[in-house]
Amino acid sequence: MEKQNEDYREKKVQYENLKEQLEELDETDEEYNRFEKRHKALDLAAETICAISADMQSQMEKDFNKRISEIMEQVTAGKYEKVWADENLDIHVLEGGRRIPLYQLSRGTIEQVYLALRLAASELLCEERMPLILDDTFAYYDDFRLKNVLAFLADYPAQIIILTCCKREEGALTELGIPFHKICMG
Image (cartoon, rainbow, N blue to C red; front, side):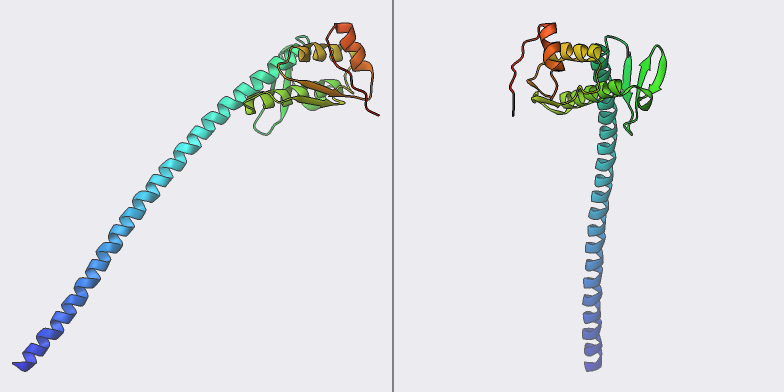
């Protein structure tokens, strides 16, 4: 009888141990299920964010290229109908139905494209207009380009500061009747 009682106690201890192990497995299983659900939720969130990001990037690219084109059309007196930068920032212009890569344009036109690109980027990325500081930006512009861009900038809704070592800009502003304040340094 005593041997059976001892066997019974041993079996009871084994039973309790097995029961604890089973509970631990259940907890682990529940934890695994929670982890799996969270993992799936994070995957779905990441996919959604990527899709929204791609849509936003596509729209931003369209808006960016549209604005660059508008600026270039104005500063070139309509010579360039469209300008676009792709996702690698390779830039092309459309002139008379021909697609021309940026590197095939004159230095003056390239500088006009870069100005249009900077203006478009600042308009789309900044909530409020920042002052525009142009430091010898027009060095490669001929007189025609210079007058066109100054006429465009005269109506631009931001404070514009032109830094230059030449008197060309002052002469063009005077000729166009665009008011300006001249400050000479050194």
